[in-house]
Amino acid sequence: MHARAQTSDGSQVPYTEDVDELIGNARAILRDKFMRADAGISGVNMAVANSGTLCLVENEGNGRMTTTMPKLHIAVTGIEKVVEDFSHVPELLTLLTRSATGQKISTYFNMISGPKKAGELDGPEQVHLVLVDNGRSRIFSHPVLKPTLQCIRCGACMNHCPVYARVGGHAYGSTYPGPIGQVVTPQIAGLEKHGDMLSACSLNGACGEACPVRIPLPELIRELRAEAVSPQFTDAAAVSNATAVQEVLGRGAKRTLGESLIWRGWALTHRFAPLYRIMTTAMTRGRGLFRSKAAAALLSPWTDSRSTPQPARRSLHELAKARGMAGQYQNNTADKRGDNA
Image 1 (cartoon, rainbow, N blue to C red):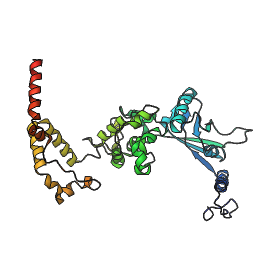
Image 2: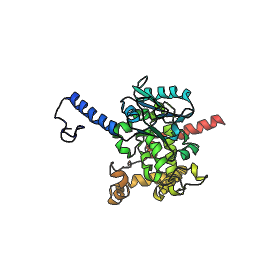
Image 3: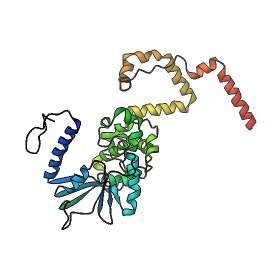
Image 4: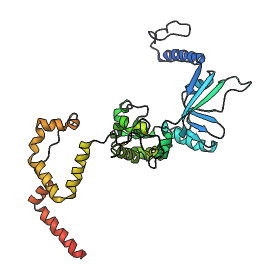
């Protein structure tokens, strides 16, 4: 701070290693900036429709300074944050504070219904509200993904997500990290750009259990994974008509011919017993081929960060047959069929 920060009179901040003095210096510098600012920009936790009241929940107090000191207050909120009247506010506020920080109530709860009136000492001279859609109407129209808009931004899903706890928020490459980010961002920016985020989930279900507004996050992640590899690709720029408004942007963008053929082959071999036996025999007998350079190149997306998979020397069916278990199973099955007859 001594090298980079300056006080309001332009002099350098005195050098100190005392924490309280450092905090005091930062507070003085920031408050001067708040006092000199031409406009303050804030978000909105809840917007009450019948009174035009903007509710802001915070613990630090910077939101209150942002909305009262500058002459112009600009509030930005998504359209899903609008509630009908004040009767909806207490329940949402209780859910938000307890799920986010474990508090019964936050330090500050601000209610702004307009600019300051004649005779009032503080408050902005103008208040402007910006309602952001940015794909929210399209999300609302989707029959499965609609619950995404129930989010109150408490962060409970992130607090309980083992993947988020391990990799951190920056790994998600978006403003919204964690489980809710995996659901929100692909729907807003498109699956072709953010579809890979959906793979950063083990589907353990902790986020769905922790969500106070009961968003089925695991189900939504699975739905978006299916949308990402859907046979029908929808270009983000082409979504403009009523029939396409229910589709996720970039639907099918992560579908590849090679992966589709692999899964079709997998389904086919597991549907017919002779094909399954041929496949397992080929893999066990040709297990040495997995060490070749050709196999390494083919499996490189997997083996770049993992060990090369190695098939067993004998299949499970062969091992069971060698121990006489296969015949025993067949005899038991025949007995059951006779009893049922």
